[in-house]
Image (cartoon, rainbow, N blue to C red; front, side):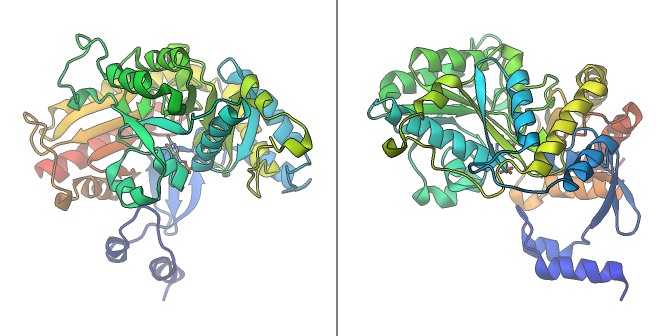
Length: 452
Ligand SMILES: *Cc1c(COP(=O)(O)O)cnc(C)c1O
């Protein structure tokens, strides 16, 4: 048996893949990625694929970026890990300072963890305990939005709103008010932008008016609900949420795990509406897609509420073993340096326009219900009937079929249900971007219309 076949068998034999129906996986030809080069993934046979979803929304400047590789190697030669419990390390300090400088105004303190779910858990626990330290009684609940995704740990699932992921765990979860979220293509109120004058905010306002005294914080994915299917909020929504939180004395947590680090065309999505949250969670893109690292940023006001005498136990009793890992922090610093040396955001703007342009023709396909784009985040919602917006049956596995067709054409993408996601590395070359979109167009056409 060839070494490739051995790996394929062992991948089926030993690994339980996340978010994967393993019975289906057993029947598929596994793709085993061995190397990366810029926007390409290369498998054990040497086949090259365009990385159309940035290795699940994390890669920014391409694979094997020399500057980031070098930063990690240099750090390895010094030390790979020491603890942040009582000790500190240079990359963690430098990164914290840098993040405070580039994130929205008011966020002054940096708490490290290692993935997006924990960054949100930390934010929820800090917000919860903040009110106890302030001696405000009864603020023990949270508000989140329908279709929200904040991660897979139980606290993050509690504030989640995607039924197929979260419903099974309801008995384990804490109480959350789920406010209606905008989904303009399928507006829950049956209204049309801009005549709707943001009716979707009304539901949140009603919850706040009735329950603000019970609510510690609201958590939101600013501008785009990613995992829900790249659902884009109408302009003014985020600012409206900020105003309501302020008016009703509820902390605002911005979960920028997916949208942060340039994804939407600005460094952070909150910048689109000049919004300053009280807490912010970051992960995915922070190390340029190299190592697990996550951050919860908070205001000075929140940080100071936890100060006290040792015996008062106002300490934030939370910390993960690899918190502030020097290798990951060194990678993150190098990632941010490349943003500057490459002028990543400046060079992204024309590529966003090119992408918009190339996406236009998707609307001609009989199964494309809506094409949604914010910066370098794209969702193409496939429907069985365009006029009635009727979804495909889950039995059709339409999203999976499209991505398998794309794979044959040298493109790696992932569906979110029936929404095809395009989310390439920010530094992808224009020709690569055009090829990526072209192959996805034909993949949808062949899979759903039967001809290219
Ligand atoms: C991916 C994601 C998370 C969870 O991050 P993990 O690193 O997978 O735990 C949380 N929030 C949002 C918005 C995400 O996209």
